[in-house]
Image 1 (cartoon, rainbow, N blue to C red):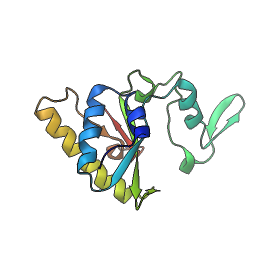
Image 2: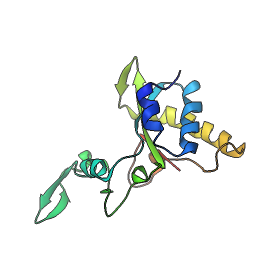
Image 3: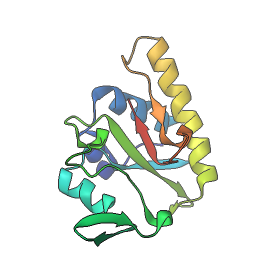
Image 4: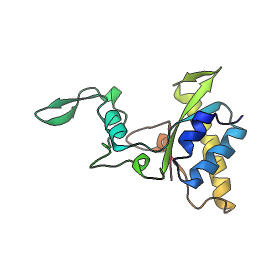
Amino acid sequence: MILSKRSLKKLATCHEDLQLIAKEAIKESPYDFGISYGMRLPEEQFELYKKGRIMIDGRWQIEDRTQVVTYLDGYIHKSKHNLNPSEAFDIMVYLNRKITWNNIYYMEVALHILEIADKLFFNDKVSNRLTWGGNWMTFKDYCHFQI
């Protein structure tokens, strides 16, 4: 498998280590995946931040925790996506050519990506360790990888 032109364009906004990891990982990934985000402008980050929230008395308050996708607003609290180059990318997994949001597939792809990233790190091909949002304790982000 290879990454699509659209995925490569998004990946090009990322740190070179992330670019190499994703390009190597797609080759033998258990499922096809694409890059949904690399670098995000603060405005784009803020649009994601607003999901699941409403404005009350001039402050954003969580209305529906199930809809919250980030706790970082892109202005005061920056995401690794807001850096240039980005120190994070998000993926989407394809099953039979359609995007799936079933976390089981993301876990399997993530294990593969992390294995590739570790091999590249221990062979001095990349200088940063990769972490996966699915391993976070308080907020699981199965699509997210960062250095």
